[in-house]
Length: 208
Image (cartoon, rainbow, N blue to C red):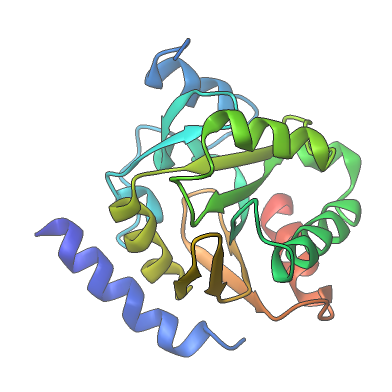
């Protein structure tokens, strides 16, 4: 019931903002948020994505929950690695945003790419893709989940996608910013758009 209430609440907000193995889970979460001053024992805000009980696997084949990202400003986009059209441009937009964040602040930001094609995008494939695109620094992360968790999370982000061939999807092109508690603070829609507001939103959150 809590999950349903959360989804209904956050989807209501999206209507107005859409256009604008090795380590344990506990140790992994501490590692990701080690540079944060956020109290990880504090109750999460109602609209935090970290209320979602989904499980994900990184490009390093580590299992995490979304809440393990808590304490970081998160810049998130949904892609798939075999995409030849929009996704390379979305990655270019992510790189462009990353380059505008001061180097001393990058340890407070996670740039997260979530696969909409978990069947193809195994951890091994995501790892190779990260290397191909020179996204191997700690602030880059690739995630895959179950088809059900992926579709549910896409709905929260107002990202729609549909398989149109064995290797192709049509999908929304949205970059989303979350604050340290997992609450959405900004969305950028489109490809190659002016990202001044997006960069500003990140810097504002990092500076808080």
